[in-house]
Amino acid sequence: MTRHVHDERSAVSTDRSAESTREPEGDPVLSLEGIARSYATETALSELSVSVRDGEVLTLLGPSGCGKTTTLRLVGGLERPDAGRIELHDDAIADADRGGFVPAEERDIGLVFQDFALFPHMTAAENVGFGLNDHSKAERRARVEELLALVDLADHGEDYPGELSGGQKQRIALARSLAPEPDVLLLDEPLSNLDVSLRVSMREEIRRIIDETGVTAIWVTHDQEEALSVADRVGIMNDGRLEQIGRPETVFERPASRFVATFLGRAGFLSATVADGVLLTEVGELDADALVGVERSDWGALSEEAAVDVLVRPDDLRVTPTSPADADGTITRRQYQGPSFVYRVETDGGDTVQSLHGHTEVFDVGESVRLDLVANHPLVWFPSA
Figure 1 (cartoon, rainbow, N blue to C red):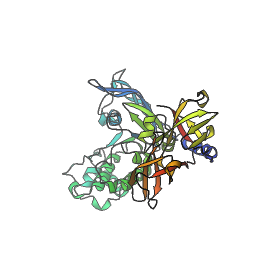
Figure 2: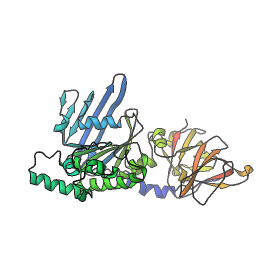
Figure 3: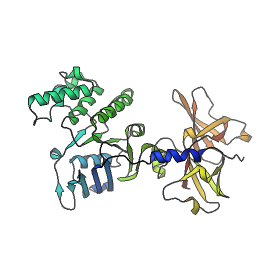
Figure 4: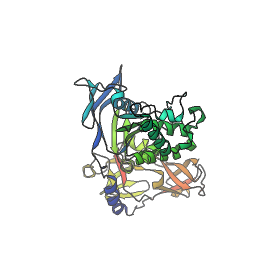
């Protein structure tokens, strides 16, 4: 069947693009240039270059083994790079080419570990004040009281870690890292040891605390929702390389590679063919002004009958039960998520896509359905795989 998809994507895309490509304000506090790190025959990082601006929260997101924790360890001074240079306020703290290296304890960098790393024999207040030995007793007491109030634990200063909940332990660990007023705060999977029910509230709480202190931060996680929700910019890492970096909405809406597209949430691809300046898909025609090419791809360079794949996410599609003769595909899976259902559809042409519906829209597995594109934003296309 032929259905022409007509909407206001072009008008919508202009404002969204301008907003999402704005650079964060402030000068770079931390810069990594050409960083490489290997272990025996395994390459953990290769040619990593990235800067973090004053007051910015940069999240590094990627699967296990992609190099994100190694990046933190190098910045924190827990390891030395094999190549490249790390600068803090334009001063080199690691320079593999010239042999320069500033030890971890001499860097103005705070670390928050996923296992909290609190001293069990010290009270919460003593943990927070642990790194303030160069302060007078009065100064240390005032600073500890200030930070306990900041993390909403003013009444728990005399509690020991064993008497605190997981969320309270994480806030104490955060307060301890902030106590010396570091130039940069590093957070390594800070929510991974918390119950799922706590993670959303704690990520909002940690972001609040970071905003109130104005500290520059790098936050490492493998949780896509966490990374996108707390970041000013997000960097997607894969196999020791930075695949893409940008504002969360830019990276999500305009992924630079299939890996980024599929790693950032549910992704489906509709096969399409170029014909007379439009893309022909199983669910209708797409005009060129409703599309955005993946980075380095040029719509004008596509030849007639060229094959491409169009990225569609569950909220871009709607399914409607219909007769097999009028159907675009068949529901092969139904996933209930409380407020919503996500339906997986195998199209007649062999594509696999997903469609998001409210919890009252109940369709059966095996049901024949029509697919309609309802996206109100440009869709990204990739050269066919």
